[in-house]
Image (cartoon, rainbow, N blue to C red; front, side, top):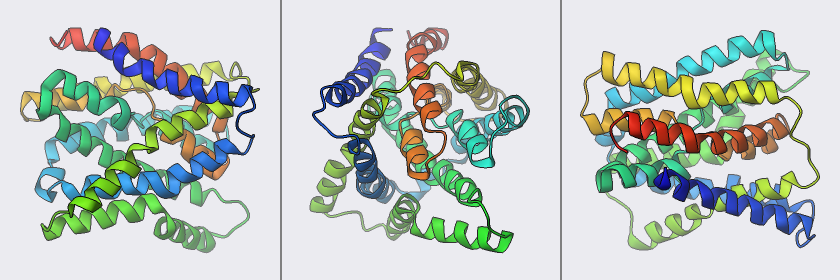
Length: 311
C-alpha cells in the first residue's frame, strides 16, 4: 500500500494546490480553462509525439498486450454505454463521456511509476504503450463520438465535422506524426527529446491543478450513483476482463500480462476532465469520477498487488 500511496498522494496535493489558489483568488475563474487549453494544445501533443517517436513500431504493436488491455477497455466501454443508456439517460455526448470515463486509465501519471516500482526498468515500456493507446485510440474515439454529438446537423455534416475534428485535433495529429516518425528509424535529436520531455511533463500537473481550480464553489454530491457505477467499472470490471484475457486466453510474458491488468485497474485519468471541458459536457461528473476512483484505487490497487503476488 505504501507504494500506491506514494504515487497517489502527489496527485491530490497538486489538485489541493489548485483548489487553494482558486479559493484564495490568486488565479481568476478563467484560469482552469486556460490551463486546460495549454494541456490540450501544447503539453499533451509534445508528450504524445515524443512518446510515439521514440518507441520502435515493432514494440508498439505488441498484439497480445494490446488485445488484453484494449479488449478489456472495449468490453467495459460497451457495457458502460449500454447500462448508461437506460440507467443514466443523457445526450449522446454525455453517454459517451460516461463510458470513456470508465476505461480511460491514468497510465502516464500513475501507471508508469507503479510499473517501475513493481518491475524496474522493464515496466516502463508496457506503461508507455498503454499511454500511447490511451492518447491515440481512446481519445481518438472520444473525439469522434463528441464531434458526432454536435446538435442540429445532418449525417453528412456530422461526418464532415467529425473528420475535420480528427484532422484538427492536436492529440491525434501529434500521435500519428510520432508513429510515422518512428517508422523511419531515425530517432529524435537530443534537443527535440529534451523539448518534448519538458513540455510533455507539464501535462499531468497542469491538468490536475486545473481540476483543483474548477472545484472551487462546485458541489459534487449530485449523481453519486452514476459516479459510483463508473468507478466500479473502472477499478474492478475492466481489470477483471484484462486478467481473463491476459492469463486465460492469450500467451505473453508474465510481466506483460501483469502490466495489462495493472494498467486496466488504474483510476480514471485527468485527461477526461480536459476533454470534457474542451467540449463543454460531463465536466462535473468527470471530476467526481477522477477524484473518487483515485481515492478508491489506493485500496483496490494495493489489494491487486498483493493478490498478484507483488505485495
